[in-house]
Structures are given as structure tokens and as C-alpha cells.
Amino acid sequence: MVACQKSSHEPPPVLKPTVSHGTVKEKQVIIPAEVAREWRAVRISVIDKVHATENVYSFPIGKVTRVPGAKLSLSVDAFLPSFVIEGSTITSSSNKPGNPGVKVRITDSDTGLLVYAGWLFVNFPNTHAVTHPNYAFNFVAPVAVSR
Image (tube, rainbow, N blue to C red):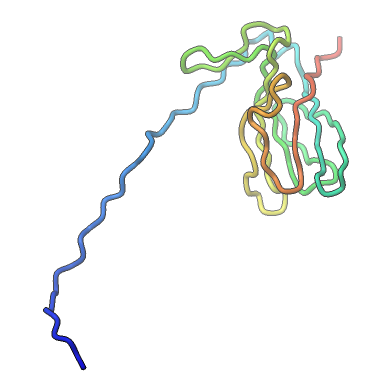
């Protein structure tokens, strides 16, 4: 039995996507000159969730470094000893480590895919936690320039 249906050759309606959230412009990071002169590296704890081990490594500021024992690379893009947000700017309110923050990028060394990009904080380790199935990262301390 075949039902009679009205033949319609009208095209389906065009759906227009809507945006639920506006695009947020990334804040500008300003590193004061005295901060750039005083600090050379950061110490980051790398936790291997599979083998239940933790090691602390020094990563130089402004460089990309392979994470020992992992197929990951970590880039330290910025370090601020006293992280503050002033309007659309991220900077340091002093050169003393009151609220140390480090901006990092972690990439998969094999694929080049970005695993994490953001800030890690000594005082607030869970605020921007890195979500990776095998590794966790915690900012431990800054390393000053030797004099």
C-alpha cells in the first residue's frame, strides 16, 4: 500500500548558526624590565600518572625544552613574580614572588599538537590544572639569575 504524499520541491530552510559567547581577546602580557633581568628559569614538577613518579625540572624562560622521559615539549612563554591583571593587561606588581605565575605551552613532541596553553601558579596549583591522561604539571618555584 502506497500513501499519497504531496510532492514538495522546496529546499530545506537555511539554518543560521548563532554564537552563544562572544570572542574574548587575549590579554596583553607585559614583563617589566627588572623582572626580565632577575629571573632565568622556573622549576616545574612533572607527575607521571602511569608510573606514579614525580620529578622537578628547571625550564628556561623563553625557550622550548623537551620534558625528560615524556614525549612532550614545554615552552615557558612568560614569568611574572607577582602576577596581577590590570584591565586588559597581565603584568607583575613587583619583582618579589608574591603571586608567581608562569605562562606555558605544552606540545606533543611526536605530533606537534598543543596539549595545554595557559598559566600555572605556585599559590593556586589547581586553578589552571593541565588535563593530560599521563602527566600533571605544577609550578614549584622561580629560579633567579646567578650573580
